[in-house]
Length: 483
Image 1 (cartoon, rainbow, N blue to C red):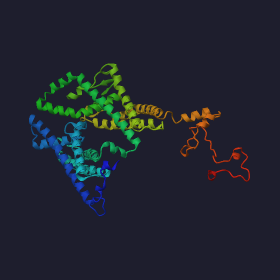
Image 2 (cartoon, rainbow, N blue to C red):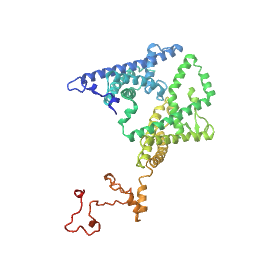
Image 3 (cartoon, helix red, strand yellow):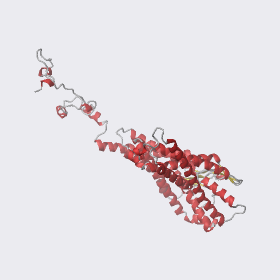
């Protein structure tokens, strides 16, 4: 990374690097700013969620739920936005939570990390990591305190999950914001090795293709079942304010639906309750909750839609792997032909791990009854995605790298050995004429280019060339004998 990108000129001198300087004072200011930014981000998020809960409470007042209950409900929903499991009285454990709600705290924490970097003149990646920790630790402590304070007989959030999930979200979001404020992504990428950048670029490309395909499949499914979507709305009859809140809830669950669609395209599919399955080969579904987004679920024991549509959906993971393999070679081509397929397969492994983690967060229990198992299986999604995307990426990366090497250098590394073995044993005076008069020192070890290396003594006398040795009294000519 260049010094201009990280803003590390001499301005850094005399601040925290000076012996006996103000490094402890800078650290105290950084910790104080991190705690202040964490409280600000948490407070803004709570205000937004409280306003939504308050609007719903005014539109449909609930007996026995006063303003204290509204604040507690808003706090629980704020924790739900951090993917914290909630234990609801009479219903059981609620763990399938909307991933879209993570965007609210994530955006606030992103801005907090950027503000600290710009306000405290952070100049190195290590200081950016310290900034993320300065935000994440107090944010996690605040989330744990809110989980304790919001606990009631009606609902209680998991305190360990509140501490862990809020710390992870705050560290990642604030760290990415701090890194982006430190330097552009292209310059931050120079901290990584070329092969690491290639694998990460291929993984990002494969994930982008799968996410785009999952979003398209979700949109097409909703469009094809628009009448069922309207029937659920009419059955619920939520009213104007309730319809707006229900729409926000569905937007929050859209990332879950995209990950379900990706699991569907990979083949394992997903479950919507115990004993159910939705996959390209067929679906077995039971009674569904009255939620409009579930109207897009495929129905039919032999799959829904024409047969060619299922084949196209099953081909998307291989297309994602092919694009990932091309990106691997484009970022870092290599002359070692065996290396490109290995990088492509590593790209598939990372893609499978990312989708497995996403599937784990996209599903979860919706109570203690039949809906205790909802969503895709994380380990099945990981294994199938790693194989499908990894094999396609490995084959594509190998072929693309072979073509690049062939086009760039005209022949492959093993071609010289084959040419040398074909011409070995022949008299080739023209080959000797093609050899340079002064053999370059850096080409002596590369004997594959000409088959054999012939060493000549350019200072030997004429008698030495006859093999009889130099006559007595006549010295061999050398550099000192030149005119």
